[in-house]
Image (tube, rainbow, N blue to C red; front, side):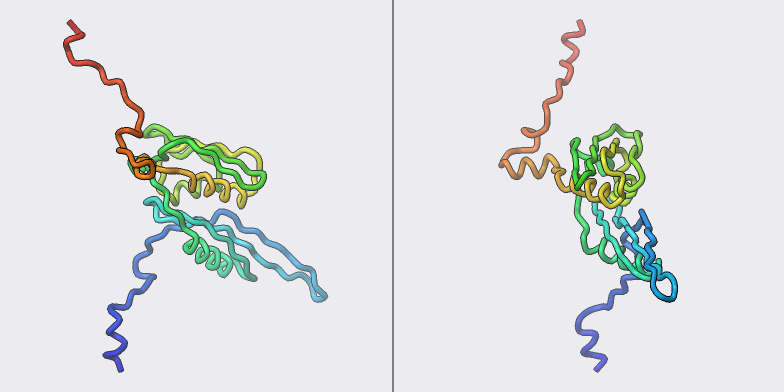
Length: 188
């Protein structure tokens, strides 16, 4: 019988090497008043990412905090998106994201800028692996709406390679032309 179980290949344990980092963004306690007193419940908002271009968020509700965090983490892993990063450190272009009353503006940044972003947005960028970005949240300060607006903006991002492929052109035709200085003949 043991021979049949091993035909499927080596068994992989998911707990051996954690490929995803997670960040708890918000925890909310709600209470329900019942005849015997109050019953408490907890809602958790978690952002999960591999810090190499994949990120997702999830929310979970339970009677205990650890269980709510576990549920949120599982949901976040199921809802991950891939975002193309320029040089593995910043976004390819400026973009906006919206969700409900929340609006976020995300801009590319030169090397060494760091992550300039508020609470929930910072968690998304850190889990995504972005090193340099300037962002601003306008409107809703609700962490759920801020994260959803950030994810909406990140879904809109496209790399020059994907744009060139979609248009049937070369990457060099898509990128802006840089005016390189002429050779030493003009110096004389």
